[in-house]
Every structure is written in C-alpha cells, then in structure tokens.
Image (cartoon, rainbow, N blue to C red; front, side, top):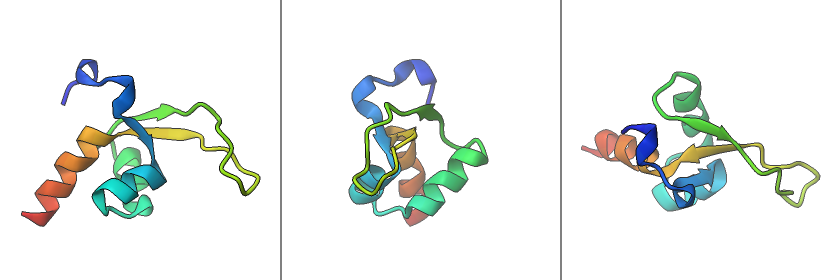
Length: 71
C-alpha cells in the first residue's frame, strides 16, 4: 500500500486497531518498528490514565497483514 492511498480516517491508535482487527497492540508496534506498516504522530489526545496517545497507525495496512497471518 502506498502512503498516498491513505485518508485521515484510516489512521487509528494501537488500541483502536486491536479492537477492529484482533491483532495485539504489541504486534502492531513491532510491525511499525520493523517497517511493515507506517506510523504517524498522534494528536496527543489524553488516554484517561495520565498519558497521551502518541502514535497512529495505518489501519488498512494492519488489516492486510492480519489477513496474511490468518491465511
């Protein structure tokens, strides 16, 4: 997937991606650190436990990798 194909609505935080795909947050972060998916700076929205969400991920890329794992 090319980065130009993404829309703002395609960017989600790790916990949101986990809820939609079932892929654990730790795996999503590992994929991003290995360059399998893109990561983007978040908007700093507060999480409710004193921390801010800092990184957003491309949901279509996560869904694509999740489908590859289940196949």
